Amino acid sequence: MEKEELQKVLLEQIDLRRRLEQEFHALKGSSPFPVFHNFQDQMKRELAYREEIVQQLQMIPYANIIRKEKVVTHLNKS
Image (cartoon, rainbow, N blue to C red; front, side, top):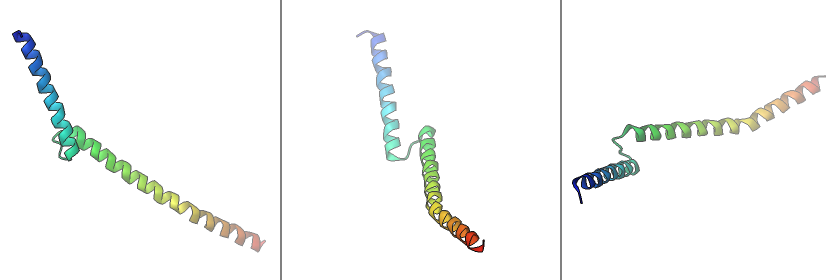
């Protein structure tokens, strides 16, 4: 192989190793790269948002019961 070809192969191998190390750290959960920390933070925010929505949806039946009671009370007064 010529020198240029060897350099090209070397750079490809270096890039491959860098990407594999990033994936390893991401899977391990100790990524030194801020991209993965941002992803983890985004996932935590998404989970918190979903939990809040679930809590709000659980309140809807109670709100309907209260409304029905108010309507019945109002109709009974009439």
